[in-house]
Image (cartoon, rainbow, N blue to C red; front, side, top):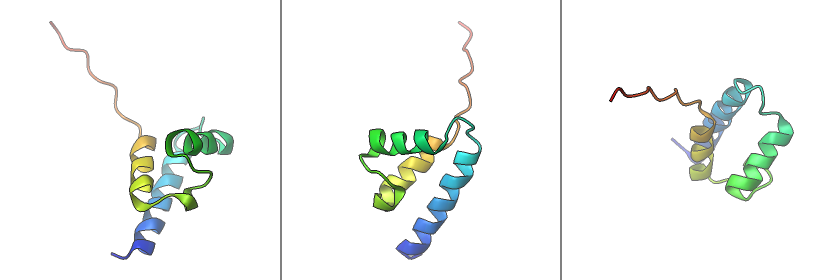
Length: 68
């Protein structure tokens, strides 16, 4: 898969994830990019950073409490 197709696929995943996070408005998204990745726009990110952003945006299930 070429890099352009990878970027577009990651952009789509990012947009889907953002829509599922009601608190992630444009201002919060830009703050996340600046704080975590040191960029102003996802266009300034490389493939690795975009992949990390997707992982950051994906909600994680709560950890189950262990009996003990």
